[in-house]
Each structure stands twice: as structure tokens, then as C-alpha cells.
Length: 103
Image (cartoon, rainbow, N blue to C red; front, top):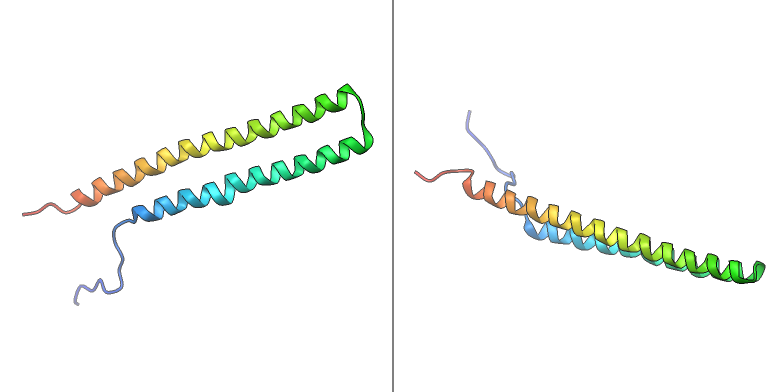
């Protein structure tokens, strides 16, 4: 029986990590923040139709603050994830370099 590794893929792709990071930012964080802001706009319009006074203004201001806080927290979470992913990529690079020792 002969050893056959035809069609096998080994190694890792650092570019894949960077694409994954970009996709998370674009498709998760930024999309979530856009949706939150769009819904906040709709909420403001609805509140303006049915509620007047200082409490209504305070409610809208609080909602704006909450959306800003959520978006900031999402971005901070991604920064932590990005750091972890890049560390993992570096570790895989070290593993790849030292997997087979020269003779």
C-alpha cells in the first residue's frame, strides 16, 4: 500500500483570518448598529406622534444613549475577538514553522 496525500490541504491562511475579521465588522457589528439606528429613528417618529413633553424627550435621549452604548460595546467586543484571532494566527504560524524539524 502506497502513501497518498493527493488532494490534501495542510497549513493555514492568515488572509482568511483577516477576511473573517472584516466580515464580522461588516456583517455583524456595523449591520447591527445600522439596524439599531434605523429603528431608533422609527421610534423617535412614533414617540413624537403619541407623546409630548419633557418625559418624551428624556425617553428619546435615553434610547439614543443606549444605542450608542450597545454599538460601543459591540465594537469593543470585536476588538477583543480580533486580538484573540490574531494571536491564534500567530500561534498557528509558529506551530507550522516548527511542525517538522530539519535533519
